[in-house]
Image (cartoon, rainbow, N blue to C red; front, side, top):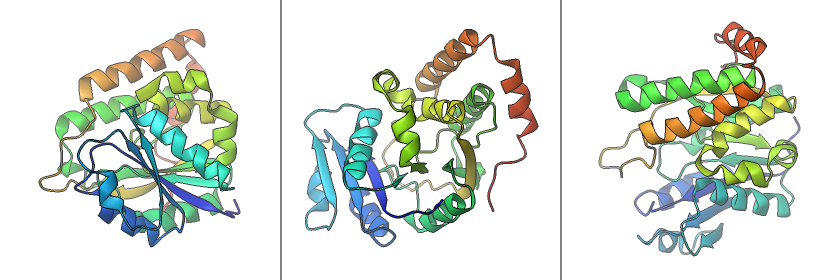
Length: 249
């Protein structure tokens, strides 16, 4: 895929401790960085003063899906054909962005995920179990194995966003990032993963991710789709058959 203009979108909710350093490192990789401050009350926005980026602010907390979509819409308005997303908590290293771009060049019409496949021993056990459960369900519904389906570090072709994102998808809120993986496959897009290391910083704020509650929402979304599709046995077979593939080295 020939990439003409790229934007990095960072949704941020109460990320004052990490957002400036993350944004600075993102700017080293991409001149168009868009941060969406999702109603933070800890001074997140002030930490970005003087930086050459676009700052969008939600007056109240609207959730990650709404913030991602607002940033993506801004990127499209600027004429970008590719969007990379990063979480604001510093768990992603923007220095890995060129690896996602390389994968996109090699695999056109694909959604690229940065999969935390290295140093998994550092991950909290409950979160790792929840992520693995989500991977299985999402892969089944997508009909292809998806590594680290909960990673927020991704590369989206803008054409995928234009073809898949709608009001119904956005209404599902938290599960937006999970559901778009399934919808990408249903629209003929592949999913490949670039392996990255897990980064868990000492003293970092607690994750917004709730292993039990959030995975329950994802399971419900996946179960509804599978029920509607007659449990999609072909998708399960395709997912299991591709489990050892889909990783770009």
